[in-house]
Image (cartoon, rainbow, N blue to C red; front, side, top):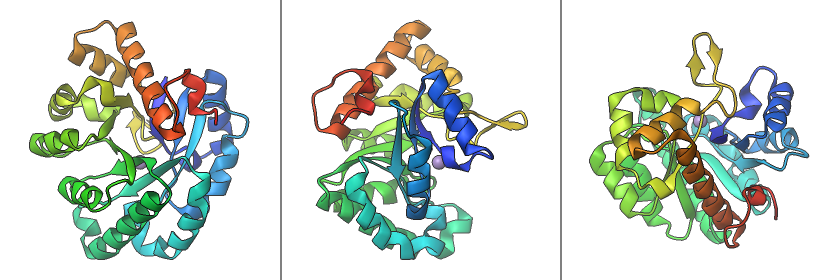
Amino acid sequence: MIDFHCHLDLYPQPAAVAARAKKDGHYVLSVTTTPRAWRGTLKLAAGATRIQTALGLHPQVAHERHSELALFEVLLPEARYVGEIGLDGSPESRPHQDVQRRCFDRILAACVQAGGRVMTLHSRGAADEVLDALCRHPGAGTPVLHWFSGTRKQLDRAVAMDCWFSVGPAMVRGRKGSELLAAMPRNRVLTETDGPFVQVGNSPLMPGEVSDAVAACARSWSKPHLQAETVLAQNLRSLAALANGSPPGSLDAMSDR
Ligand code: MN
């Protein structure tokens, strides 16, 4: 299964969870919320050909972690994927809007300098602001809007800007998420869990537990489940090729340099 946005390092037992994801053969983009978490999170993926680690600075911790921006810039040459980054427009983030925006701009500028990265982006309550920032930094790379929850109009703008999307089980449970999924170009859709922040019952969604999202894609595209999986696998190949700067190859291109 393809889980293009998962916080492996934030599960209660990260090593065990990562080992299980490796054993099960899931393709995981393991995102980080602070540059200081990068090295430790990278170790979780040691020996895994299908787990990639993204370098991030989550907007909701930007006000506490902005001093790690210099470390972000130092580490960026080692990272082919960036995230979780972006902006958060929820009421509790309002006091930190300026610092969030400064961090995001500096990260995007660093990505431009580095030649572009595949980036997994948080845009809750701030879709237009995130797209505006991407416009200010052409060449930052390929944006993947994770758990997009903006309006249809904002989605159309993102599509026109060549954004990709990762959709999870929680997003497609509601009508709005399903309608947004239907409007996304199907060659730019991936699945995600956003675990451990998404719960099923009392336990967090585990890496790769995306079958409800695959089922939603299948419904939306009027395809059998297996064919939807094939489309998603092809999408991952294309995106991994963008990250690797090479033509689309095998799925393990997600790991091969
Ligand atoms: Mn997340």
